Amino acid sequence: MSEYLLEVKNLTRIFTSKRKKTVALKDVSLAMERDNPKTLAVVGESGSGKSTLANHILGFLKPTSGQVLFEGKDINRQNRQQHKQYRQKVQAIFQNPFDTFNPFYKVDHVFHMLVSHFHVAPSRKKALPLIEQALEMVRLNPGDVLGKYSHQLSGGQQQRIMIARCLLLKPKLLIADEPVSMIDASLRVTVLDVMEKIKTQNRISQLYITHDLSTALQISDDIIVMYKGHIVEKGPAIEVIQSPAHPYTQLLIQCIPLPSPEERWESPIDIQDTRRIESEEACCFCDRCPKAADICFRRQPGYTQVSDEHSVACYLYGDKTE
Image 1: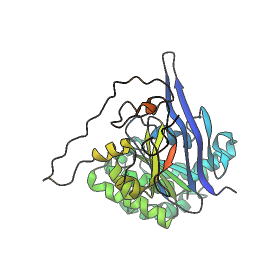
Image 2 (image 1 turned 60 degrees about the vertical axis):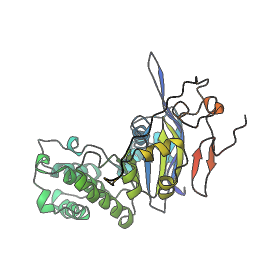
Image 3 (image 1 turned 180 degrees about the horizontal axis):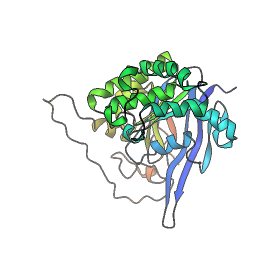
Image 4 (image 1 turned 135 degrees about the vertical axis):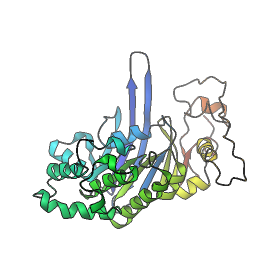
């Protein structure tokens, strides 16, 4: 049996059209341990490949090359029964809770559909205590939300209902794609606290997709930073945020507004290098990097360890010889 709950091996996804080829993911690899539940944050700006990675792990997309392994088994080689078991063990929370609910049904419907499809309980009556227990785990009073329509609930309540829905299946992995970006700031802390609680108390590993480094630091144990489909930096969350090694990560940190009204915040300059990119294998960040060297325009760097668990793909730390 594999030591990893989730393992992504050299995942590459290329989207092609008549006019162009877009590399959405390039040799992406990551692993999450089976017996040590953690939250792994995947951060980067729009277009970095975060959601594409999540969709591959959920099985919504097929890779051009590479593998997604869950408990040691390739998810793209499952039969129908194995796929159904996988869907029970791996649950997702999406960005917009308002699009999740059918406005013609009461919110109870999302639970009843799950109970019926996965045979959580033999009847709705026997499923009710399980539903109420799941709601209480996410800090919702069942009497306040059950029997209501989605428009009668706040965004924070709706998102916590979706987390409770996931908990009903007792999953092993929760994939959360920007789960708090469309929720009022006052409710974000509540949702993030709930996610932290279910990791520690329910021992559910989490893949947290976000562009927000501040929430990534709050909730995650480890972070990987993505840019144009590449992982450019990875390591413990505190170390990556407090001591960023890659120039792109450093720019992301500088983009976080300062909390003090006395200190003036200025967005970092987005540098565009005028040198021509000579190869498709060039560093993905070379045309924006203020520290780019000639070799960066010819070849993508490998990973260099900057500490025991912290690594970066940058020639500032690795061998610059060809």
